[in-house]
Length: 311
Image (tube, rainbow, N blue to C red; front, side, top):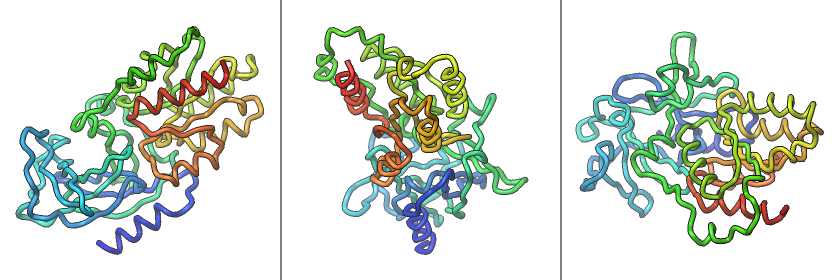
C-alpha cells in the first residue's frame, strides 16, 4: 500500500498533458471504479474502530481520526445501492480525498491500480445511465473491462449538502447596472454543479448559457467568431470546469487563447481540484482566474469584481 501511495504522490506532482490520472478500485460488486488521483490525500487499511455518528446519512459509517482531525467515512458501495463493505470483519481500505477544501474518507473493498487516460478516451455516460447513476464518465481498461468514474460531487452534495446562497453582503453590493447585459457562458458536464451555478447566477441577475461539453463549446465559439468579433462583446465571461470527458478545461482554455479571434475572452476555470498546482496550471494554460467549486460567495465575488472592473 505504501508503494501505491508513493505512486499516487508521484502522479500528482508530475506536469500533466491532456490526460486524467485515476486510481481504480473495487467495491462490493467487483466492478472497477475510479477517481482522479489529484483528489487523493492518502490510502490506508480501514481501522476496525469507526465512531458512529447519530442521525447521519445511511452511507456514512462514522468518523475516524486522520492526521489529528476527525473525518467522516462514506461507504461508496452503499451510496451506489450495493451491499455494504464489511469493514469490521474483512480487510478493506479508506481513500482519503479533498474536494473543494473539504476532506473525507471513502470506504472501498480494495484499491487496484493507477491508470492514465487521455480525455478523448473518457466518455460521457448516455441514456438511462447518465440520469440514474452516480457516474460522471466511463473509460476502458481493456476491450472487455469497463472503468466507471464516479461523480463524487453528486455523492458529496447528496450526503453533506452544498450551500447555494450568496451572502446578503455581496448581493447588496450590486450597483444600479442592468446585470442582464452581462452574459456568461458556463461549460460544465456535472448536473449537480450546473444546478448550483444556476442558483448563484440567478441571485446575481446575470444572463447565462450552459453547455455540457468543452468540445461543443469550442466549436460554437469558433463558428460564432466567423460572424461576430470580438466575442467578448457576446460573452462577458466564460466559466469552465476542468475535468470533462472529451476535452478538459485546461485544453479548452489553451485552444481559446491560441485563437486570435477568441483570445480576448475572459476565462475562469472552476474546479473541485482547489490545490495550488491546479491554480498554477490554470495560469500556465492562459486562464484569467480560478475559483473553487461549491463556494457561492467566491463565484459571486469573481463575477462582481469583473463587472466592477469593466462597467
